[in-house]
Amino acid sequence: MLDATLKTQLAAYLEKLQQPIALIASLDDSDAARELDALLDALLDEIAALSPKISRSNGDAARKPSFEIRRIGSDVAVAFAGIPLGHEFTSLVLALLHVGGHPMKIDAALAAQVRALEGDYQFETYMSLHCQSCPDTVQALNMMSVLNPRIRHIAIDGALFEAEVAAKHILSVPTVYMNGVEFDAGRMSIEQVLSKLDAGAAARAAEALNDRAPYDVLIVGGGPAGAAAAIYAARKGIRTGLLAERFGGQVQDTMAIENFPSVEYTEGPKLAASLEAHVRSYGVEVITSQRAKTLHAAGSDGLASITLESGATLRSKTVILAPGARWRQTGVPGEADYRTKGVTYCPHCDGPLFKGKQVAVIGGGNSGIEAAIDLAGVVEHVTVLEFDSKLRADDVLQRKLHSLPNTAVHLNAQTTEMLGDGSKLTGLRFTDRSSGEARDLAVGGVFVQIGLLPNTEWLQGAVALSPRGEIIIDDRGHTNVAGVFAAGDATTEAYKQIVVAMGAGSTAALSAFDHLIRVSAPTEAKAA
Image (cartoon, rainbow, N blue to C red; front, side, top):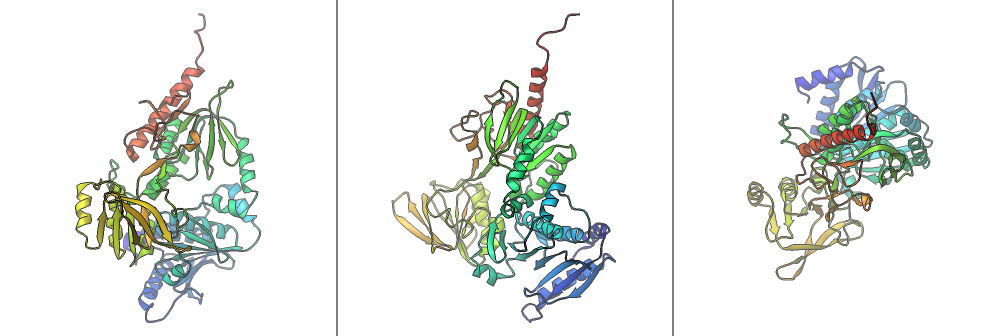
């Protein structure tokens, strides 16, 4: 199962185990599941052989094939239904370490909040091994279950438990159930889970943030631009804070990165993790799971302020805006109703859930055609709907698409409605702009790929925005407000690329530092 290099790396990690753990497998033993059982059995045997602190045994859990990682002599345990390789291999390694007593990287106050939760919680996360968003959710709930044994969690590979997925109409991953009822869908952090379980969590967090001293520079956004700005600011020795709903931004949803200079290939979550580690290594105060609501320019005290949706207010001498962008939605009737129930925005995450189905991709740019090509290898048929009279994707992508036998393209197609039966999507309606004819397309999934929308609604009236809602900046990252700078995909920078955003974030940080020097300089030289 594991190659020699991976075994060596895993053995080194497992040396950090502080307490003995047991791997308890529940296997199907049926003819249909024999091959899968053998693979899981082999994987667990290989892991157990790498450390004297790991033992192997068999159990009889209801969901098979599955296995539990249990701290011997305690109630601390996490479980996986399936074989957690691919993007979930890191979740497996962390689960082994944390159940085995190795300290987890979590704020002490946050850990105490998890331990203090009252009640019993049984979480089930339906995930895909191809999903880059799923590991964050799986790892968050695994850590919570280690911190508080009254919390139970099992990560379920939806591709192996198709009957469960179909019965629950799960068409997006990760989807989390708690005590048998759907809890939430999408990437989740521990802070986000706690906010739903602990009614007073948000108020306590806001109170703690209000007490923070003013920053020299406060960065809004944790993507490449925000991370680069934080690194450059912190290296100047100034007090730096970074506010983000989640670290990494859109990079977390990027499958393959092959144009980052000096790195031939990497994946979004890996790059995001490296950026976060680099930022934290400089002592930057990172504030996650909080959303900015209002920006107020500096007053007579020389401090700008940002009010958060939680009610807290952060103050700073300068601000760097790097809020990034999000997937643009069609805005047609039915889209919101069937989001995660057939309407999705991530072909890499959710594509495997549509195996054998007919799907549509809205958008004929590079992202849309790349999505259609990827999906064609999984689903029965892909139909691309493009509003324009021609596809806008690169020629090489168009040639690849047209070479595939299970794809079709409709040009001049204006999507007007998402259709469904109340519980899941069943199709969409579009108008042929050439003939005016309205047509219905029966599909089980719609993948919306029509570009990005800047996250700047909260900045209306605070800084100058372009007609597209982008923050207007000059070549040094200045906005029209003194002491406020901006960088990244939410700005008027023409090229929305990772490396460009990093450069822009660095520029904005240097400009903010220059601003701090100038405003703090004496108004006139002292007499000799």
